[in-house]
Length: 458
Image: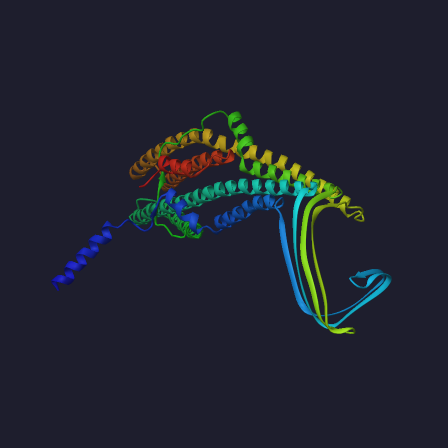
C-alpha cells in the first residue's frame, strides 16, 4: 500500500510539473499550423512544382537523344533496273537488272537519333515563359506563406475574442441573476415595485440567450482553429495593454506595397508569361536550326525466291544541320497569336486592378494601426468610466437613487466596453501584420516579434 501511495504522489507531481497541453502562444500556433494546415501544404506543393519550370526552360536548349529498336517477321521484294555491274573475271556489264526476295524473314532494326537546338525563336519564347512562370510561383509561395501567417493570427484571435465574450456574458449572467433574486425578494417584502422584478427577469432571459450564442460561437471558432493547427487549446495569450503605431507615413507604406507586394510580383510575372505566349505563336513562322545526328541498322534474313540464305543488311549514319521552315498552318498560328495577345491584355488589366486593391488594403491597415492605437486609448478610458459608473449605480440602487433598469444597463455597458477594448487591441495587432504583409515584409521573424511583444500569457 505504501509503494502504491508513493507512486501516486510521483504521478501527481509529474502531472503538476508538465506544461498544460492546451496552453499555446501565437508563435506555437504558427509552428503547429505549418504541419497541420492543408491549405498551406497545398501552396507549398504548388511552389515546388513551379520551381521545376526553370529546369524545363533549361532543358529546352539541351540535346535530346532517342533510341528505337524493333524485331519481328517481315517480307521484302526489291527490283533494280538498268544498273551497272562489275566483278573480277566478269568484266563490266550495263543495263543489268537485280531482284531480291525474302519471304517471312527475321527483321532486326535499331536507330539512335540526337538533336541539339541551335536557333529557335519558338524555344526562346517558351523558355522565357517557363522562367516567368517559375518567378510567379516564387512570388505566389511568398504570398501563400503570408496568408498562412495571417490566417493563423485571425483564427487565434477569433478564439480569444469568443472566449472573452463568453466569459463576460457569463459574468453578466451571474450579476443579472443576483439582481433578479434581489428584486423578487424586495418585492415580496414590499420594498420594491413589481416592475423591477419584471425588468430583471427579462434581462436575465436576454443574457441567457446571449450566453448560448457565445457558447455556439466559441465552439465554431475552436473547431476552425483546431482544423488549422491540429490541436484544441484551452488557454490562449491575451493582448497587452499597449499597442504600437505604424512607423512611417502612409505614402511610404503605399510605395513599399507597390514595390514589394508578392501578389503584384506574381501577377507581373504572369503578365510576362502571357506576353511570351504571344511571342511563341508569332515565332512559329520563323525557321529553326538544329544539329542532328543519326545512326542505325536494319537486317532482314531468311529464304526467298532466289535462295535459302537471302540477306538484306543496311547500315546508315549521318551528322549535319537541319533547317525547318514552317510554310502554312491554315491560319491556326495567327489565330492563336491573337488569342494570346488578348489574354495578355486581360492580365495587364488584372494587374492594374490588383494594384488598386493592394493600395486600398495597405491604406486600411495603416489607418487601422494609427487610428486604432488612439481608439484603444479611448476605449481604455471608457472601460474605467464604465466600471466606475457601475459601482456608482450599484451603490445608488442600494440606497434607492437608481432603478433596477439603471443597474442592469450599467452592467451591460461595462461588459460591452471591456469586449470592445479587447476587439480594438486585437484589431491593431492584426492590422500591424496586414500592413507588413501588404509590402511583402511579413515573415516568421516579424511574426514572432509581434507575438512576443503584443501578447502576454494570463
